[in-house]
Length: 87
Image 1 (spheres, rainbow, N blue to C red):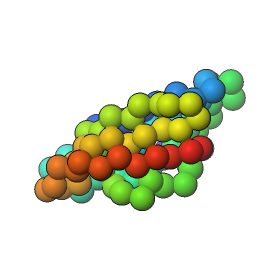
Image 2: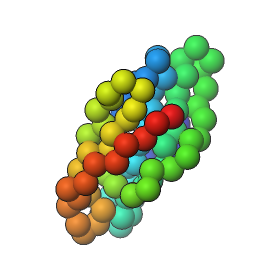
Image 3: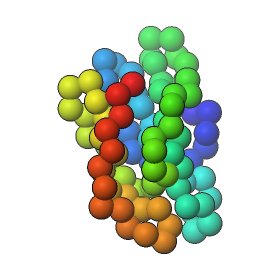
Image 4: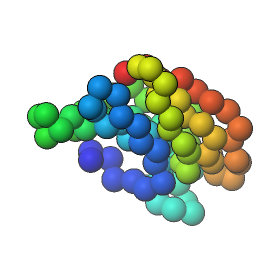
């Protein structure tokens, strides 16, 4: 994965795994808005357009061809928002 981080959300659309948000330095980092995609057919990662809000500890359900960033945290705030992402 190009951006090392933890506490991200993941979702799969059309066989491609999307890693959304996360945090690189727990307790220090406010969260990331990064979105990166792993395509197992090419065994490669690509960086995608970022989400509007940086967050970690989120859920990422998939509905149709959209990912949804649900909840999570942006230090020190717990988020109660949902953002749609269409890769």
